[in-house]
Length: 218
Image (cartoon, rainbow, N blue to C red; front, top):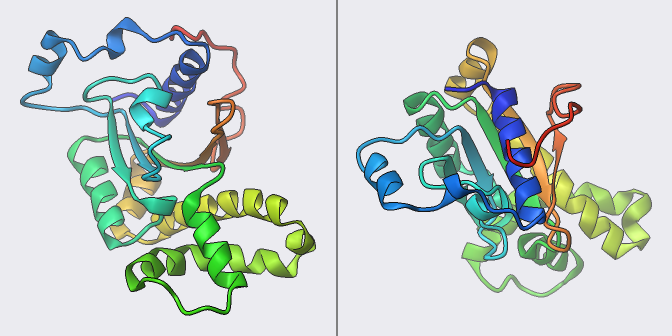
């Protein structure tokens, strides 16, 4: 299994191909690849992303069958089932990189802001289970300088929610903590821009890890 930094660079290169409309031949779901993956898998990264239909991880990172272990849930929140899924992947496959992937114009963030600003009764206890996990990272923003600028607050809320999820993963599981400390597991936060298609890795990335020039074909 490749290192976390190599995995991170592979994702960045794949996203560069995606934004340049250069899909790689290796990402195609060929018969040979399907056959290879029928009995085993070796995903080089775990992606905990939002369920939004516009953010399919395999496509925006230009990866193919068996390359990514993807967990999708509205608001890229971290609950017990998500933690367990990450634990399974990093233990079973030796994957060294976990990415919490948020995105601009996130509906779960909008729903949370609406609940905070509204005095109406919650519409659904199931929706509130998501909102309640997003809310602690978003609510403090209303007491800061962004309180009077809702679009800017919403943009910052997306990143605040990603940071909260990465922190929960890093500190919410003895298994993950051990792998971070002893096996080189890296957990980072990222944001996908719906307009540009670019992914910005902004949280938990080691200094200098992504400063080297790279080829979009890497």
